[in-house]
Image 1 (cartoon, rainbow, N blue to C red):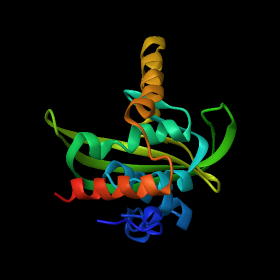
Image 2 (image 1 turned 90 degrees about the vertical axis):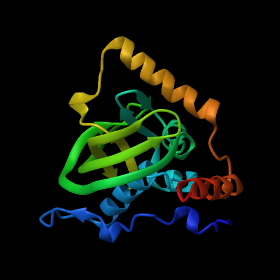
Image 3 (image 1 turned 180 degrees about the horizontal axis):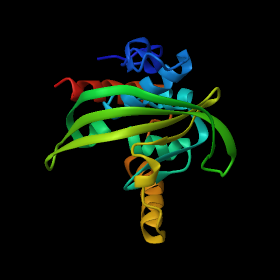
Image 4 (image 1 turned 120 degrees about the vertical axis):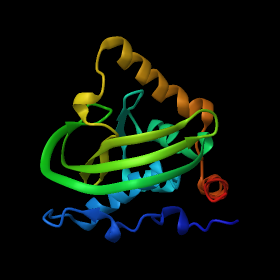
Length: 201
């Protein structure tokens, strides 16, 4: 299975068809950023999508990981097809939009972003171990330049004590170095083709 350069940036989730509260004044960019994070969780991510959709010093947070730049984000999220045999989304709905929220990036830049909350119910079937039922809120901080911060749980649920934060940061640094991420478009295409084959088996 070959993957064209154009398809590396094509969303698996159609941004215009993502379920959303009809009262929300969502822009095309808001929807594209939500489509991107859904693609990643569903095993359809590519390095091209991450480079196009996340700023260089973007932050990714979940209860066990903390990534402070685009490469670390890729190391965390591109490997979902590596460790899972399948994924299934039961619910993905844009529930709220709060414009002009202050947040920070991985390099501690202060930025103003639109905060998007997505109600998300999703199954991850791991190759080793049980199925993980994820029921959470995806929080996307969207700017014209790209996603500056992405959380897969409400911020108040993400641990911030010293030891846990240290372990999460270490995980974010080690993951891309050990597991690797595509270094160029050719590797990205090979990566995407292999992952699509895995997810469609």
